[in-house]
Amino acid sequence: MTASSASAPLVVVGDVLLDRDIDGAADRLAPDAPVPVVDVASDRSRPGGAGLAAALAAARSGREVVLVTALGRDGASRRVREALRGRIRLVELPLAGTLPVKTRVLASGRPVVRLDRGGGRAGPATEECGELLAAAHTVLVADYGRGTAEALRPLLARAARRVPLVWDPHPRGGPPVPGARLVTPNAAEARALCPEEGSGGSLGAYARRGALLAARWQAASVAVTLGERGALLTRPHADAPLLVPAPFRAYGDTCGAGDCFAAHTAAALADGALPEEAVWHAVTEAAAFVAAGGASKAALWRRPDPAPALPDGSDALALVREVRSRGGTVVATGGCFDLLHAGHVGLLDSARRIGDCLVVCLNSDASVTRLKGPGRPLTPLADRTRVLQALGSVDAVLPFEEDTPAEVLSLLRPDIWVKGGDYAVDDLPEAARVRAWGGQAVVLPYLDGRSTTGLARRAARASAAGAAGQAGAGVP
Image (cartoon, rainbow, N blue to C red; front, side, top):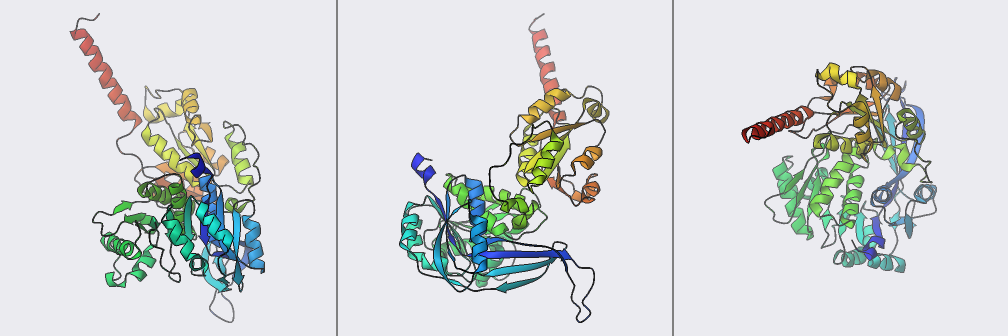
């Protein structure tokens, strides 16, 4: 990336909504109708649609992000401006009417009903919009069918011929402009747009839909997002689509996951990634986004003032208190980590992306010996701790003497407990303990063929072979 392209903005064009969540508990029915009564515990609002996509792109890319959208003088528009202030630069179109507000009523985190109001439409493009898109390095169109993309269509068509353009479509919006680098419909949108392919949910059916849409839209590629299955990247008339699976099964609120996928795809393309690389990054980030609480996560919308310096990495409990005070998500994992290998590194990298800090609960030397037998650990606790602390994915290390991390888990009370392997979440011995305080256990896939035991055995064989070779050569 050249110095000039690094300073050029990532421009997000699209319709902003105000998303509102009213959450509470429902343990009885109304006396006048068989509907649940929700005792309200919280009422939160945040930018949705293109506003969410722009905020996520700004957090990911590190470059200037400019949002072109329509806002009015209503209360919802004012709340959106305030939430985005200091995160991104706003370029506003006039809004005829009021900003759309989507209100979800939830009971214990589960949606009961959604209420939509407001239906404002975007006004005409301004001269500033033309200058901005002419200087853009990458463009993301978050089209929610409210008129912003349509008002800028000629400008977007010219931008697509010059820079990477990602288009996140909507059933009520228009087609992407020709030349888009990547279009990101979800599975339901792809089915609705290709009725000739029927309603089948096989990968083959989605591959045909993606290729058909890419040809119809004259797009370089189409990535159909498939939820927990990942995303399917296709090209016009291509016979070999690329399936990018999700790195783990994420349990949580999926609201905003599509915006997250599109935002991280655009940010990766802005950094020079190929479409295949961009989709891989976006699938990983979308899974982590859902697992960490989705768009309603409090830390996502906390005012981005300079944060206080983190406490020393060795003080895990102080770190957890500090992160939690900011509304962040605490992630923990545990193990012996006797000989650090690629499987460990991959697990720790994936775990850190889920939340705002990662604490490694590390078995002491005596604990490792009881679990693994005589001769272990191969590496003493002080060295294992130092190596883990040197990794960028690890924020703190907390040693423990017991055979299991149950006691330190009760001290840390992490929001998410991560283990690597191919077993079910319910099989984890720590899962029930973590659920006791509202936490969640997650299993991440482990890199096959990598283990401390395997490394030790190969080292022993190599040492024995070397000694035999020296004896045969007469070396004393």
